[in-house]
Image (cartoon, rainbow over all chains, first blue to last red; front, side):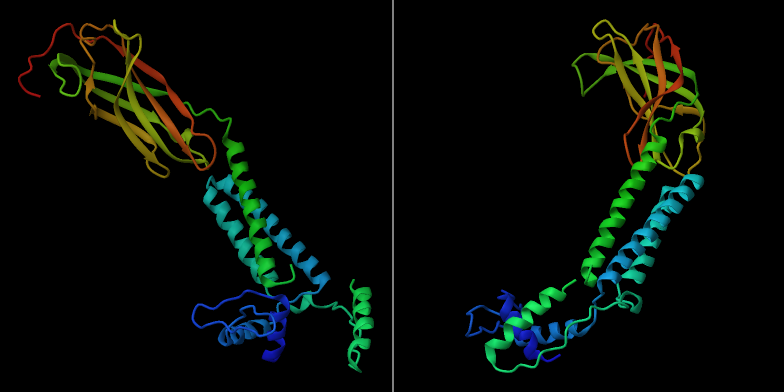
Length: 143
Length: 180
C-alpha cells in the first residue's frame, strides 16, 4: 500500500481533485491538477481500511438490512397503533436502522466468505506482449 | 453495495421509503374517522353596547358581550395521528346587509396529553364581538357553535363542527356605555 500506487491511479483517472490548504501538484504527464501530497497521504490511509465485500456478501447484506428494517417497521406500526403514539413507530424504525447499520456497513467476515478467485499475476516478461493476454483473462474470469 | 458509502446510501434510502410508507399508513388508518363530539354550550349573560368602532366604520357599532359555559369531552377525537386541537367558538347570525356573519369569540389550543375534558364556567369572550353596523340589536337568532381544527401528524387538516350549538336572542336595548 505505497503512495506511488495511488498516485498512478489518480493520474489514470485524470481526476481534477483539489486541496483547500495546499497547492495541488501539477503532474507533468497530463497537465491535470492532482491531489497535494497531504491529501494523497490521507486518502491512502482511508483506502487502506478494507470496505470491500464480495458479490454474495453484498447480496446478503442487502437482504439483511431490508429484512431488519421491514420487520422493525411492522413491529413499530403495530406497537404505535396499539399505544396510539406514532412517535414510538418512528423510534422503533430508527432502532432497526441503527442495528442494520452496525450489521451491514462494516465488511464483517461473513460477507467475505466467497472471494473471487483471480488468476495469479503473470510475471511481467517484456513489455507489451504480456499485457494483452492478461487483460483478456481478467475479462473472462470476471463473474 | 461494494463500499461503505454505497451501502449507507441504500440503507438510508430504504429506511426513508419505509418511513414514508408508515406515515401514509398512519394517515390512512385515521382518515375516515368521525371526529365530531357533542358539545354543551350554555350562555348565562348577554350584554349589548353601542360604541365607537375605531377600526371599522365611522358610525357607532354594536358590541356584544357574552358570558358562556362550555363543556365537552374531547378524548374520542385524539388518536395517534392528532397532535393538537384548535378549538374556536364562533357566532353566526344574519343581518340585513349580510346573510351570514361569522365572528370568532374565543379559542383554545388543546395539546396532545393535556386535559381533554373541557368544563369551563363563566367564560368571557377573548375577542370583541363587533358587528359592522347595528345588526346585533334585537337580533333574535344568534347561534354560538364550537368548531375545531384537528392538527395531524400526517395527512389532511380537517375542520370539524361540534354537534351542539345554542341560539339566543339579543336584547332590544343598549346598556349605558358608561364603563367598559
